[in-house]
Length: 485
Image (cartoon, rainbow, N blue to C red):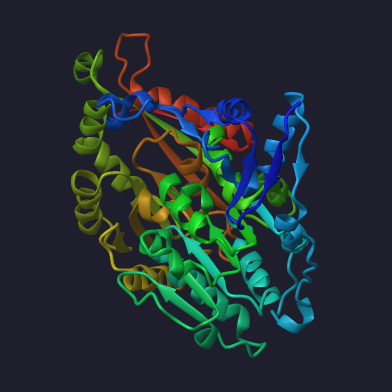
C-alpha cells in the first residue's frame, strides 16, 4: 500500500506524489513510441530513444487533462490515492452560456453548436470534434461572448485563420453592438505581441517562444484546428498558460494516433464528438458530396522504371509529368463553378500548374496561394472567390487544406497524392459548406497506376487505396473511372 497523493500546482499540470517505484510504474504506462520514430534524425543520431513520456518519472508532473487517465491507471494497478481538492476547485465554478437572443445573430445556432458550448462551460476542459464546415467559428464566438469577463487566448494554425476568425467575429457581431476592434487583438506576420485587449487571436508559431509571464494573464485558452498543432510548440504554450483553467480545442478530425490524442487530451481535456459529417449531410446542414476517383494508367514504358523506386522519386515523376498536369488543367477548365486545386510541392508542381492554367483556362479567373502568399492577400482571394462563379484557386495543401472558409466552392481536385486521414477530410471540408449556387460538392481524386505488368501496387496507388477505405468508412458516394494517360 502506497502513500499517494495527486496535487495540482497550477492549471497546466497535476503532480503525482509517490515513491520512486510508483512514479516509474506510472511513467511507463504513460510512455509511447510515435509512429515513424525510427526515421527521425534525432533517433538516427542516437540523441533520442523514441520514447514520449507524458508523466515525468522524477517529478511526477503530468498534463492536467490526463488526470482522469492517471486515476484510472492507479486504480487498475491496485493503488490507493488521495486527490488534493484545492487544486481542482476551479472546475466547480458555474459558467453560463450567453443568451442567444442577446447575440442577435440573425439566425438560430444549431443544436450541436449550443451543446458544444454548454459542454465546455460545464466541464471547463474539452476537445470538441465537429465536422469541417459545421460552424466551429460560431462555437468559439459563443464561448468568447460567454466568457466576457476573462482574458482569452485563441490559437490558430496559420495566418489565414487569424484574419478569417477575426472577420467571422465581426460578421457575428454586426447587429449586437459588440466592438470586435476594441476587444480583439490579432497576432501574425510580426504584429506586436503586447496588448490590453481582452482577446488575442494568434498563430501558435507567433507566440510559442514568448516568455512565460506573457501567458499568465489568460484564464482561457481556445485552440482552433488543434489537430494541426505540433506537439512541442503546443506543449510550450499550454505549459506556460498556467492560469488558464478553461481550455477548449476544436477540430474536425483527429489522426487516430494514440500519442497525439494523449498530448491533446493532456492540454485541453477529454474528446467529445458533437456531430458526424454524414449526420450533418443527412440533415442538410452540410452539402452533399460526390467523389469521382480517377485512376490514370501510365504508359507501360514509363512503368518499367517504377518497380523498386523510392516514394520521393515516384512523386517527383508524377508532379513533373506534363501529360498528367495537362490532364489536371483540362479537368479544372471543364468544371462548372469555383474549383480548388490542391498541390503539395510549390516550385515543381504548384507553379507549373499556375502557368498552365493561366494559359489554358482563359474563361476563368485563376488565383495562386501558397505559404509565401501574405495573409491579407489570402483573405482578399478568399473573399473575391465568394463573389465569383467561375474561378480556380491553385493552393498548397499546407495553406488551404485546413480551416479556410469558402462557401461558394463547387469542386475540389486532389492534384497531389496523399494518405493522411486528417489532410483528406480537412481538404474535403473546404467544399462542404452550403451555398445557394450549388447542389453538391464534387471531389476529383486523382490516382496513378504505375504497375505496368506488375501486381504489386506502386506507392501512391497504395495510398489511394487508403483514401478509398476512408471514403467508404464515412459512407461517401464514390465512383471510380480508369483513364489511359
